[in-house]
Length: 335
Image (cartoon, rainbow, N blue to C red; front, side, top):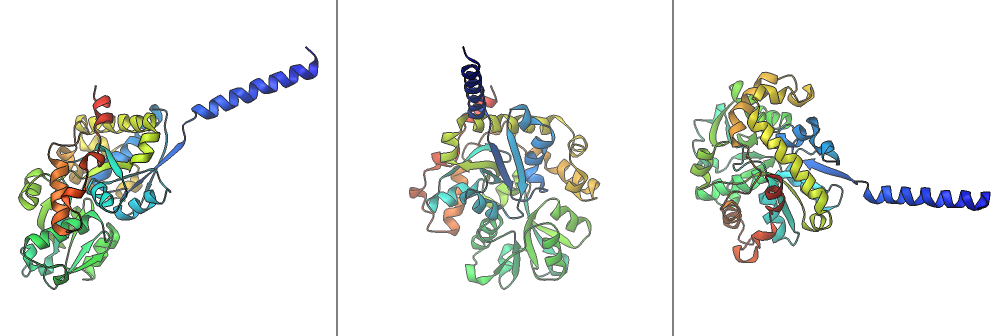
């Protein structure tokens, strides 16, 4: 073999190796969280911090967006591949012609609290007293929007009887209540715990426990989950399975470690100098995290019933619930 032919052959081999490596390289997966520091979405940051994505051979970037509905929009636009948010968005999106599905469930309760500013507790004792009031939610079209509207309608109010004010969560929610832009609102921990510990708000409805959820909503309400486009999942079965493997492992970690041990894995910026408050909130909510990531029996039907109550356009007969979640990956991960 001549020198020139030898060089050409070697070049061809190297090109083939590079092409094969590129074919097997994992593409970056971006997951957007509807509020990174929310206790209900803890598995997102914890999976990253524990290194479980990397151990599955995945290149995952977890980013945040205060409102879940905005994270949903980013996924629809193709900017991110998945969202850590509420399961109810899968049904809402299907009613609008977009198919997404939950791959792994984190909780069977919303983890939300309807708070009332302490200065207004005398006048707001039930959702029926929402009439004429400004109520805080994370964003229009968000899960807090859905739940607030349901509670109001269940109490006999019409949609124009009250005002919904998008205030996200965290500092913006707290400031809105302090400045009386809202007199009540729905939010999660650690925002709720901060307002409760300071005495600035009281609990009207607590959806952080199964008992509270059943009492207010009439049943369970599967909430926090990882949902992705059905089309993306169909085209990336291997990656989807590995994502679920990592999340299920994290759910097991949450179940077998104390709140203190879990918070020790988080960066200080996560709890913003209020570590004790965050630990206390997590300790109270920890039992609500799923042990295996499975969709609970009757959960999808309960969520659909609630959404069809507040929005007649979401007809139960038009929704194919089998396309809004899959148990295939969690079944495999739990073997």
